[in-house]
Length: 235
Image 1 (spheres, rainbow, N blue to C red):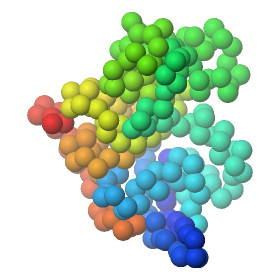
Image 2 (cartoon, one colour; image 1 turned 60 degrees about the vertical axis):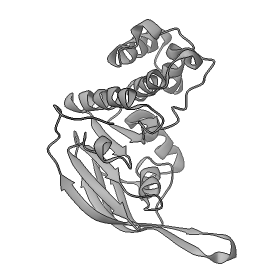
Image 3 (cartoon, one colour; image 1 turned 45 degrees about the horizontal axis):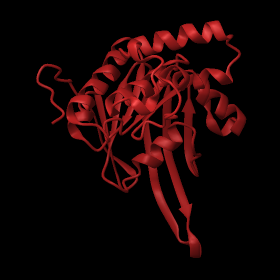
């Protein structure tokens, strides 16, 4: 699904100072994998996520998504793929606080040609998948942090994406809420979803089946792991 080869990203700052955020990253992610990307602050993991999710373009190397190089895609084509094939979960939730759960989850569908009745079915299914049916018409502002993140997951699911990108999804949550969110992502992976998680928390990363560690803009290690579901604890 995702193939990176010698990916580079440079930023030119004031005074023409060049910062190398990514110095040559190479790895592939297969359909159905659950991958965690880890690294300290400034390691390049956020830059990498932005490129993976089409929010930015690399300055060198190649990125192929579902068999097509992003170099061959216009910005409009990238935007269409993002809306159709990618779902996003952010640390800060990015919900519209005065809208209901239903309205927040429906937002990605408003850019499609799906009729209102069809959108209603998809929204209800996505909200049910994260266990918030009873909150369907509750304003987002009235939800707990954990509930808000579950709404964000439902919004990511509603377009039936091929991959879900989760950027520090437990960063603003207490340990119990974080555990619930990670268990939902884990269950989505169990059902065949591809999940790419960016986190600095080792115990969160270990929900994945593979951990890629980034340091100073390069891959430091890439290891498959056996997740321990029985004794896992985010505390």
